[in-house]
Image (cartoon, rainbow, N blue to C red; front, top):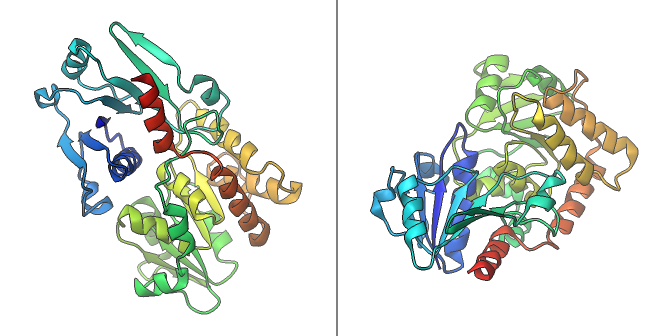
Length: 347
């Protein structure tokens, strides 16, 4: 099928990151995708080689007068250009129109997934990613997990010049600006640690706190460059602990099956606290009360929802839980498989 995927880049890399992964995954399965985006600049490092089957086009008010494809996806309620929607409605056989929603573990996702919204001759369908079989699943390309599990993480890090010294744990940091940053440094300074910091707020806060040499006691840091998505996925697998943010890196940390701490995108109305709690309720289900409570406290502290110290659970049980969680997710069909099936049914 032919697909039009519309994306607006709001204020971070997650919007274009998710959209590019979806477009590339569709193309990898033989679909043809036009990705309409208002700021494609991040793709220069995120996907430097592009992908056969994906055409990246600039967002314009009428989408260049292009005839709509078989499927039209608006990512995160971004609303395709009105002229384009008018052309959709004028077609003898209108396309399947999908709003690909934000990821959440909250109960409303199961209730809302797959619901229609009639728009005259058109129907917009709501497609919700999620963590249960009653949702649209998570982005997971064929062969992703097998490739991650085959990785020699220490060798991969060393080949990039980021190899740890003997006895150092390796931690990745990708975050928004965070008032809890001093508590993170305190938690990371309790043992020899190599902290691999993503560009942006993570590196900026480290440079401000540690100075140009990026060292404090047993803690040393390396400022990473922007990485292509494929390499970023491998980085998460190579690290022993990952601090991730937003949606895209959050999902990839789960496929890496390593302990992770999630910094959710903060919302002015405080809705992010409920979203964070909803995921934790699922993630720690069946975990002993001690480690589960420690993880809840640490995540709350890192997200500015608690003044408690940022003390992390024991690494062994945490890693076992991360592996069990991924195994459970693998029992669910991935998002693109479900999306193709959904569209085929609605056509």
